[in-house]
Image (cartoon, rainbow, N blue to C red; front, side):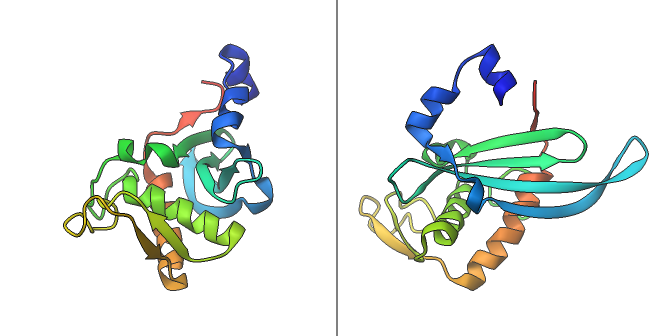
Length: 166
């Protein structure tokens, strides 16, 4: 990140709008091995939430893949619409609901609670009911476990990663 910031400063402004990385609550997973230069290399996946000082919600999520090189993808919760609504089971990129759910999971693990106020009724198949009103969505532990596994596959199966330093 320092290399990127040296090329085009962004960190100071990013911290003001999205917060600091909360390394203490990062999720670290080991993923399947991939072939690299003819050798099996194990992927280490790290999800790092960003939280504003004195706030209790996750603004964005940094998804890193380490396997001899460092790849990363940044998911900003406020830009969830930019991820689209593709609901195909075998999609290679996360959609708006995947990003929203992963941020909800991170908030649940960091701050507790499992009810989240949703202002966009296009999320979670509720567009027909009260399209302009907000509602609460409950995240059960069973759903959270299933989503964690799916998000890991979707977020790390895509080809949209950037090599650190690019």
